[in-house]
Image (cartoon, rainbow, N blue to C red; front, side, top):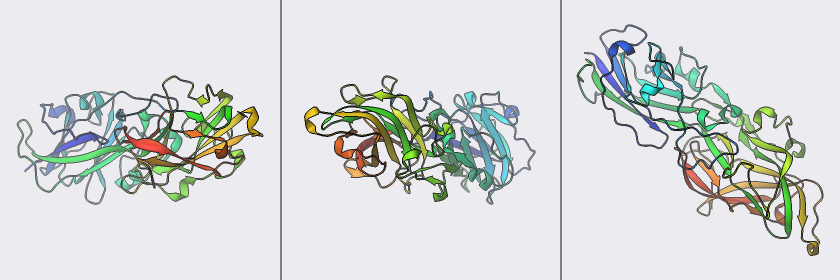
Length: 384
């Protein structure tokens, strides 16, 4: 008997879409190889939302990550790739599924090998292997700068076909119906900073640069992070400058911001140059529940002034170091992929005691709003 597989997809933490059969033409979507009678079919439907960008952008909030292209894999129990499809804006063909169809009525894929066991989807990442074992795909390394825009952050998900069909013989398709559920989730977390406020005796300051420290420079397609790729610049003062060996031009925007003309505080507050925006950085992180190391945010200040009667003076550049994020008053031990950690307006304040001439010395904890995988928020705090 021929079999049929139904595939369900969820954007991050969104509700998994129901598998509803639509009468797509099987001639349009026949698998690239001819298989024997023990074959399976699959119904695929995906949600899509408007994209956002990195760096100084509107607060991400609850908007879903965009799925704009991808690769769909089918493997056997040993992980060998039996079949695949690209997903793009091109018309549906024997090798490609039109994303407009997937995000609309859905598409039916027929004649998958009977030994198909697992389904994998990689979103927003191109140039992947299409043969061999799926482990080759999963272990492919991505650079952190490739994850700069929310539109293009890597998405990964897998699901296993159950042994028992969900439903038998759907009209128009001779195979039994199997059901597979998976969550397609980002392999990065997002850090957002809304503004920087001075208190105490400080009367003015400029922001020259904002840097993410203690981050993974690379991570695998499936979200695996390796301590070998952890970048810790620590107290290396020269590192926190414009286009240094540690923060080269490829990382500007994705992992740090630099201002040749520093941003000057107005009423002791510095905000991004674009109105109603945030400083935002996408960093690799392990998935829940494990999570991975909380990065630090280093801020380089210049031209700091203090009240005349305070007797406080500042010489040269000074640094602020956000070392910990707090949610509901509790410091987070890890960050998790698929979550947004937004330091909201007014949550990050500092005074003269938090400033040092060397980064990573005086540490600030801050409260943040944490949002789940569909880029929806929870609450957290920054700390100096």
